[in-house]
Amino acid sequence: MNEQSQEPQNLVLQTEEELHQLAAQHRELDNRLHQLSAQPYLSQPEQLEEVTLKKRKLQLKDRMEDLRRRSSGPSMASAPQRG
Image (cartoon, rainbow, N blue to C red; front, side):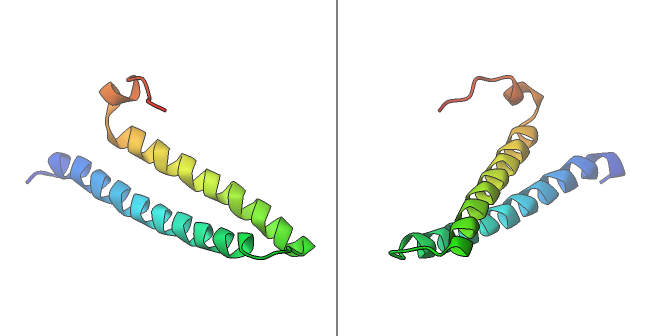
């Protein structure tokens, strides 16, 4: 295989690996949020942690969506998104 044809394949593999890592991080944050929500009362540091975790989860979700959108190619990027 020549170098040019391997480049897109390597990009796809890197994207898939990054998606798996981001998804694993997202699950870890979700698990911690479930632990916090199971408590009857959150201390101030725990409340701050909860807010921070929620923001980080959203960042990860946005990054994953961006990677998926870019990996689907330019023809799919202009397609309408379903909610």
